[in-house]
Image (cartoon, rainbow, N blue to C red; front, side, top):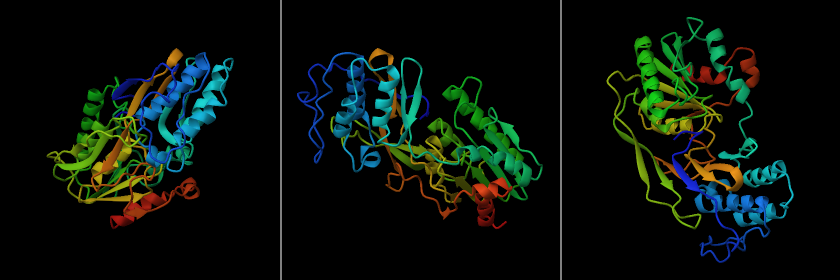
Length: 367
């Protein structure tokens, strides 16, 4: 998975003249009257209808993102706000307003004029403070007063006494090209350096609290630097039918057996509600390692690959087209991956140089 890219492409441009009532699309039991399409001619009507249909036929997490709502009703509400002569910005407001009923940061809308927004309503309130974690670690925790950096400075590490500290703030854009294979190479090179520099560590802390995701493959590669056998990390299912409950067969995804230089000691993984997407699949991969304890806050609850949708007149949409199931059989969409020891982010403490989550991780490791 890559958060800003796509692994599956679909064309959501559809002919709307006949409406949806006669399309033969099965409706979910208990839904309201089917949305028949927004009547009218012109770009706003075409775009709204294609937008609504893209979700109706491809979106994979309605059960978690819209448990008490109804996509048909949202379609009718959006239709009531559309007119033939409305501006591009006004149409954008209608569409993103519809999408924000899902509160999904993996939903991204782009207009022909270049306006882009996501549909995450309840975003983590401390994102700006998360960017200060590495600086605070350097100033107040790391022995050498500075971290060593690699992978375009997305990987930083140092020692806190006999505990190694590794901050990973992205799983993509790790190389000059940003290509998946190059990023994987860069991540492995960085982790080789980490394991060499921190080889004398008794324990290790891996910090992905400020990590907004990237490539699932990179996340899996990094997880292999911690002891453990080949193990199922999660499974993926793609929406594959007209009903919101239609899915293809689960595709199992494994974290492979640890590399030869893998770390064998105790590990604490630090997560927050700002831990997003591939950083959460990394958490799924790490939690099946027996020497890993997760400390902090649950992740943000975003897992799916982004599915590209082409809408009429140059509009574009990305949405969550897959459902991820953890190795324990649970789906953590919206809820986030659970932690073993819950510690809330303390903004006031951080402003005074104290990272309460990092302190809890050190305490967990006996420091």
